[in-house]
Length: 323
Length: 255
Image 1 (spheres, rainbow over the protein chains, first blue to last red):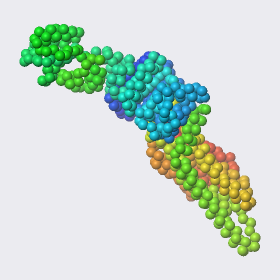
Image 2: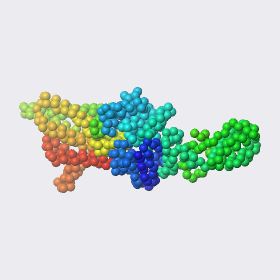
Image 3: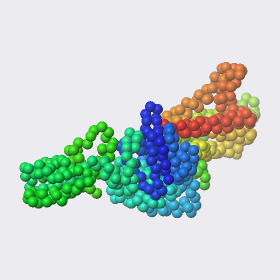
Image 4: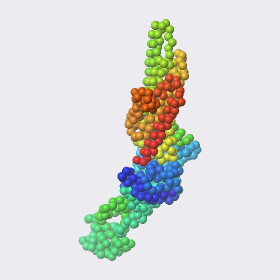
């Protein structure tokens, strides 16, 4: 549905996007991850025909963004970073205006409005001025606007910003439900969001794509070693060296007095059984033993931080259970 | 409803829920009404004087009231119309709805024309309310309607020109005050060009400079002269200003 090839965007001397290529299949949800100023919004603006790219081509539903912008615009629902709402209009008036701009009228318009009002829980605020609504409601009105003409492609710039936790879950559910019938690109800072709703993640940094894969494979690919977290009730002085002696264990980091250890092992080798046997046989009081995988957060940090190598203690500080 | 009509409807709605139209409308009608009253009273005083001197008086209300009124209204419009137009694009840019408009399946010329038509309708409404003055005068006196109607035509065309300059100024910036200031400035320059033209005298350059100013074209209409040349001037000036606004809006995408 969306095909981006070698897109470059320059503002004077500054290169905002540098030969970016990716594609989104029909019904797929793609997350755009990246620090501020990485080029997420620029990419979205090019796809929605708001601004032209300096080089490269972007195609949406088979139409070129530069040559047939009207065809592209008709097929896209776009939620910019700031919800594009008119404060002086009521929710109903605003949605009517949006619908008319997109060529909806009469019964189609009424039923589309009804559908979005229900889907986004705007029933109680329909007749209120948008200027008097809270940030969360405005965001939802912005989403209703993007969905109103039931476009096959949705481009959402940080769709869950400003919502409370319950609403965030609702919106994520909504996006998950849209997957399959709609192609969705969403940008986010919130990494669990990408893991929760997206089939594929594109990590962008400094205007370049630094990684593109499923959330699971991304973390697997960047894992240089298997890591195991171990908690013991009563470790002794030589626990450290004896753990290290287990075949396959490369490194052991003790996590202070708490009896927590982080074991780095060879890739593809599961030493948990061996470690458990050792701990029980030595009477160290085994409390917990689990494999940990890098979370998307670690991957993200590692990819967007170019020069610094990931220090082992940084890993200890940020380890989280796999999931 | 076409997208242009949707924009016009939305602009009208926005104008009438904000206090701007009411404030601007009230000031406009108050000042025009007051001026009309003053000109009528002056005309009355003159009539009394003539009666005392000559024993009878034939007053020309067209000369004494309407021509003065049309000349003064020009200046009021120059100040208040930029206040009406300043928000059109500047507000969209400030509130980030600009991006939404430009990513909607609607052409930029439709946006520009829709916004212009919206504010033009507001202006026509305000102007329509001033018609109460000639109608009241017609009840108590006799005057020639023809120059009054051409004068109104002049006001409509002049208003359209002022509004199109305002649309252009509003597209240039996201600050409404700056937009209003720029359009008042541009209009004053257009106004003063006629002075520069007469200074240059009856040369080709002088005539060209005078032609660019709206003054002589408007004066013709106020005097009851409907010349195609003047109509062409107003239409082409409005189209040029809206075209420039289109270019400015389009170029804003590239930044």
